[in-house]
Amino acid sequence: MSTTEPTWYYENFEHSGSAIGFRVTGKLDEVQSEFQKIEIWDTTDWGKLMVIDGAIMLTTRDNFLYHEMMAHPVLFTHSNPKRVVIIGGGDCGTLREVLKHKEVEHAVQVDIDEQVTRMAEKYFPELCESNHDPRAELLFDDGIAYMKNVAEGTVDVIIVDSTDPVGPAEGLFNEAFYVSCIRALRNGGILVQQSESPLVHIGLMKAMRHHMTAAGFADTRTLPFPQPCYPTGWWSCTLARKGSELAGFRERGAQSKSFATRYYNVDVHRAALVQPEFMREAFGD
Ligand code: SAM
Image (tube, rainbow, N blue to C red; front, side, top):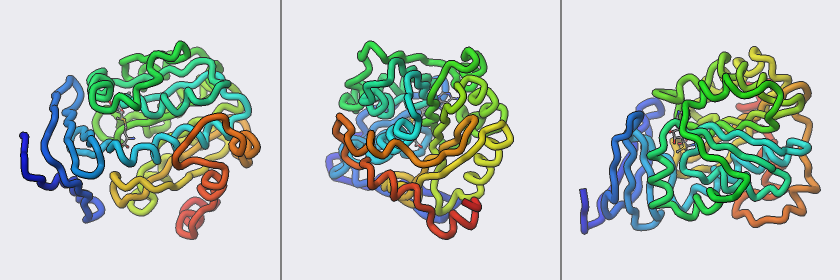
């Protein structure tokens, strides 16, 4: 569909009885891959919009919130993150943020669907600007199968930047997957996973944290942050550490970071660790 008159693109969230909409001027592209339908829309105020199977993934205007919060809190919590695995993240925005950390020696992005990356290269080239960094490796494979085969104790940080827990991403939210992750991590290694909206998915977050603990992770912590294009406009990531508690982060490193960010800074990180009352109650933190 190509329109000249702006119209509205809505994603309705049956689960929460709400919707999010963007004013769009037309659909720029659509691909039905082996795994999912990927659409790209042009908006009047938010740049490009990527939608997968009807679920809004990102916009040009607000993706920095999500990508920075998926990368920097975990990398400034780990004492020396050298080897990073990103599961999903096919738009390459998280990879770009990870590679801003000079101590990272290798970052592999494992997305099941090559078409997501091809669409990102075309419509979100700014997110793909680090894809040719010699430390970057892009694989197109199922993250569940990939993690089962990673050599034991070889990874410092795993970032699960997946779609919602339906379809190909369903198996990224259960105990069996977390068992593969904990096996792959070195002692002190950290997993971080996008964990949906605190406002409407608290049950899912509790289940995730329960599965992480059952798999053997020593400690879990959920960090909320704003994300206007996702259900309720409020999102989160959950960290789980192998072998020891998630006590604080490298505040001096975050304070004197050598790269630019638009959302993340040391105070934002501190604030994200503060739990609202209802989350404290749910998680017992
Ligand atoms: N975080 C965004 C969100 O919550 O809407 C999603 C960004 S990213 C585009 C999500 C990626 O996860 C997609 O590219 C999808 O192909 C990938 N994905 C889903 N299931 C996967 C799996 N089992 N293994 C690897 N990648 C997977």
